[in-house]
Length: 336
Image (cartoon, rainbow, N blue to C red; front, side, top):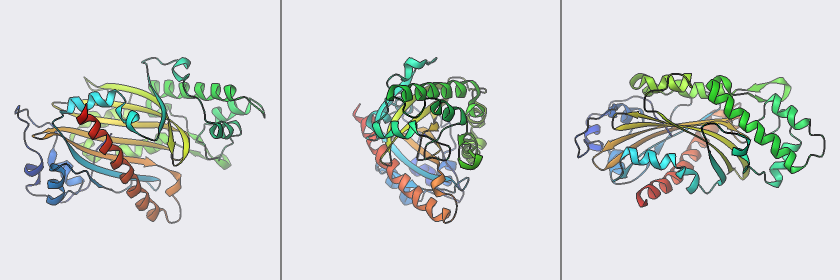
């Protein structure tokens, strides 16, 4: 999940949306900053207080990026309780796009990916994958698939993909952004998901200015982990834009007093887009928990000619999809 940006003066809005919780616990995040960077109006604040999800967009950090922001209040649920729901994989469980997913142990093995079974059309795409195809694969992964020959079996292709996913998780856990193998494109070109995640992180000025430890962690992971930080890894097989897609996700839950910074980083995506980083602040308020969220998704489909218009349309679509998902997540959190 995620956090936010941009500046204009909003006098008195903080008091309108955010009040001290009943326990009198001190506020640990600069709430005015979040209201400012999201460009929330007094009307938006009142809507959030009444239970609506307020969504929007923000400036992209590069020409491949779609951005979506939202803010809402989860009534009668504390920030720590929301974190517990996130750690359990609640978003995967309620997301209709999820085909199958698995939380990973601290030291994953090939057995951890045994449930990753490819759909027939996905198997065919991997079996004949080449650089520049729709699939996101490294040079080594393409070579491993090519070494299977012209008519590999489903089990052979799945074994290569499962091993590749394990290798990617192990490399990321060991080296962070530096361990993410780039995607091979046609003509010898590469697409660096690590570069896009680094750019997305640096665009999160509110984190950098107000919560420097969390900002440093995102750039320097696995170093610089703040005390009390919790981590979860998972793989997911999802239906993205009507195509089966493998996703590797790293979640970070970083405590800040009574509040939490929550990060969802998709550091590998097999097709459709390159990577995603979502940041959220869970802040205790009188009504329950205020959630401030920003999602930055990198995709080659919005770069080039007309990219500005594509990003605008794409960001609005992304915001709409995320809003629908988080309506379900909020309802599930309240019901539980």
